[in-house]
Length: 365
Image (cartoon, rainbow, N blue to C red; front, side, top):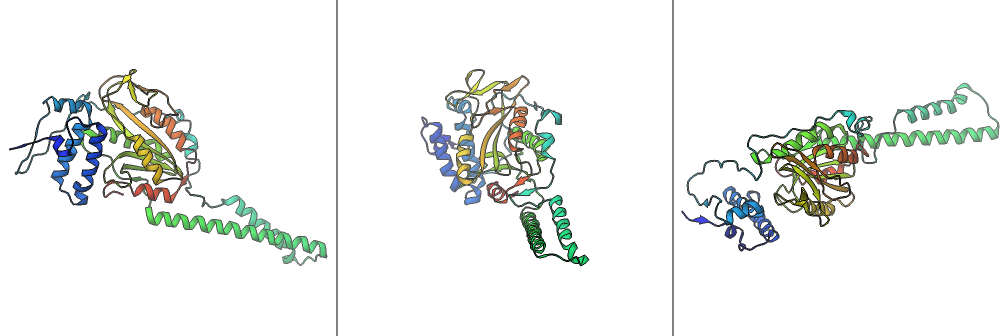
């Protein structure tokens, strides 16, 4: 059986740069994906070639002849064995933070108003309505009791009556508008808070951990909507692991399972581990943020890379609130990004939810 060369699969030379490999993959993927007319087997082979050549460690092993060759088979293949990534310890599952509510500064405020505000459309509340109705009763009371007015008093009374009626009308319109917005949102989205699902493969453990983290803590925000597996505009792949939208604020999230150590962003925006350039993995958050800025021009965007240890040991990250896509521990993410999203904890923007939901890959939109 002939052996397929990963470089030939992607149509690049052996000296191709990471950007050339990525460009070739994305170009081929648009035509070879099963959703666009390709076959599952061909696309799996393309993905295997890209995963190997885009990872510096795996590519070096492949070039040295240590990677197992991919064979063209005519018979059905058995399910592939889960690959062990660099630095992983089989069977090790990192724990999630066990934070008390009072440990998060934004937590007590997030659920104070459980009523969801759909953009700017929100009911005026009970107090102004009661006051307006009471005022109307007071201004009508002289008429009901048959009290007479002099001309000046009558003019004042008429002005008060007109003003009170106008206020009641405005409040009623606010109620109706808020009610219609709620009905339209419920009809389109139902009561769903989470869209999509995290990966189920063995090498997608970090994504499942983040999904659990978001569900446990950020659903505290009444306006928060959580998304898993989003594509860039024009793509058919899950280019973004997760996103959380609350009002007009959106955070794009990558989940990483990396070696213990201290992570930070260098002056040249390179990722550092223990003060040295980290070569055990990369990030596409910068590209994701650029793509979503074009998709959602009126929405504030942030990126976050949540990192978990791939084996026992201490893992930490620098506090970098100004960095566009900083590495974060789960605890740092909850404090920093949770507080940022909680600025308007009850606000839901239907147009933004619709746009982000449209990028969820697969049938679980």
